[in-house]
Image (cartoon, rainbow, N blue to C red; front, side, top):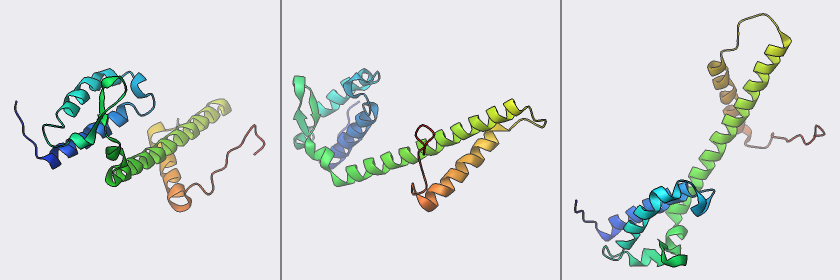
Length: 153
């Protein structure tokens, strides 16, 4: 397969590779168990940068590997996308974890109380709890969130 790219198209491809590798390495860097799966492909694409007029978007990093140039990471549009993605992940993760916690407490309380009645429909109840958290955070952000430390508040 032989493909050709304009310099602008190849620059966008480099941005995609950069964003993808950022996701792969987000917490563990090169120690990520997924890093090896994509590192070779990343190097192949970065090596093509000069051919497509994008050598300014690639630098030589430690160990002689090619890396996206600092200007790629500093690009305002990319930084905006990364920020929006990080923000979205934060809120979804926060809502999901709080809702899971609350559902677990409700289920344990019901089991321990041995109160008669139908079992909790976990999927429906989880959705209700998540919706309540979304409504709270959309209206008040984190202003009404408090952490209890050691039960002392």
